[in-house]
Image (cartoon, rainbow, N blue to C red):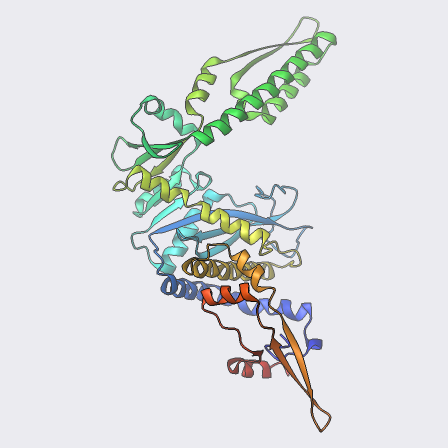
Length: 433
């Protein structure tokens, strides 16, 4: 700030910087609309697919000054801390379009109508398709989207696979790539399409998980049986212990049928056996998942490809949390927290802008590499004494090395010889004097 805004160092402090957050929050909507239009012009973005996902960020302490700070399901596995929920909408290229901040105990399925309505009021309804994960979807949301009418591609609960057991047994799958196949299954009324997806890698992962949990439950039940044989145990206590064991290994709990009863002397008696019908279903459904859409003029491959773009939203959250330090550690009030999140949103827009720029220059799509390389460019102060005793300070840019020169050339950038206050900011800097 001393260099670019001509603000004296002694006038820069944390409290003053934090107070500037109060000035930017009212411009949130205008900034989002401007960025959507500007980025669309720069990169010729397509707005046919909107991807929507949620994450949470937690606070340390009680956060009494923020009414949105609530206990809820934590994506950071910090259910012991209050949090807020952040809803983000991105394009198929991962370019952020907008976000909202909800109370920390807000369930994802209750945010869908709010977010879709906000985006439609802001950008129009057009003929867009909404992509959402299964955690967002309820039957009420599906019916609301249909009434729009709005188009969607969404995940479904695992339990819905049982309705397609016959289709899972069929062999007419469409191979998308090695280890991945899909099958389109029209709904009885023809208004929707269900897309069965089967992944070999996912199958191996789920199979290994089932086997691991099966071994844990079997070992735990055998231990409980032995304890009951050696010493008199209360049946209710044993039932709670079995319940905890099943809850800790829920992925394979359905394989086991247990019976706990009290003997004549009050001693707990435990028996168990495995249900092979559960194993048969597990072997058939491992690696499979189900998508749901009312886009009936796309192939199964196109629908799957659109849905899998949700990883762009997940990537956005990872970048915001780890590289852009999303968690508002120092802020206690609602407006300061929301303004902090806005700054992180703007930082992510710049991050994705650099990624698009980098990709077009043929330099890959890792902005972190570019930032690390350019961070090595330094500046130095040249002090020139004058005859009247004053000094003139010139902040000069050190000449970049060969690798940096090539990088700047590919990006179409030219470094100035020295840093000076841009004329557009001179009036702004005068306000600090």
